[in-house]
Length: 319
Image (cartoon, rainbow, N blue to C red):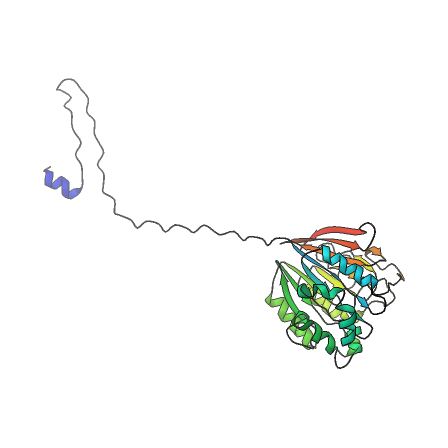
């Protein structure tokens, strides 16, 4: 074969060593076919891991500044002085009428020191002043929600979605499945699918206190439960109480149940427990604040009293 032919066919001839010349052996290099150049593979981007938010402190209580007897509210406000993070209220913020004077003269000198880091929830005593708890909305402004007068809104604290609701059905606020608030909540839960979610409102569905269970809030519980909400915080009863995870009918549900906390302990005159409701696992009569530490997929809690040892603490994972 000629060299030209070898080049055309791409075959490289091996060197042949004559077996009869010097008694050596022959070595043959196998013919090779030149490879067609290929386009370099596009490198796969390295995924950027999601960085969890730092732990967030979420602290507060309800039933706070009782005019004429402000020492307990001053004491709980002093606890907030020592605790960082975001402050929440659980309604009945200024006693007894929630008037402009009640807020200016009683709430503002106590918990008002932390107004700049507070998100508020409306209670029934705010509705003692007409029209429609207007001094409450005027005092807190955007910290009571972007639309004055509604009393329901939502915000983020770290990786958690926090939903503040208006439970004042006895003051003409609709809370049934046909209400605008319920429709808003459906949209909120469908739109924001955070792994961890907490809801706040004033009147508890489950309680061992003298105000009895507020069953009108069961429609909200049904919806929150169906969407995997983790925690509900309430006030209205002037004590601290924690319930084990349960379904909307009060049956234990460790896997999907919502944990309810009552912390109506911000400073108003305390109540006695009237019973021991099913699934109630901790009761404490005393002023103090509930400190929640919110992580990416879990949380812990401490009830911090004005005096004495911490009566309740623990932790749990989100659903």
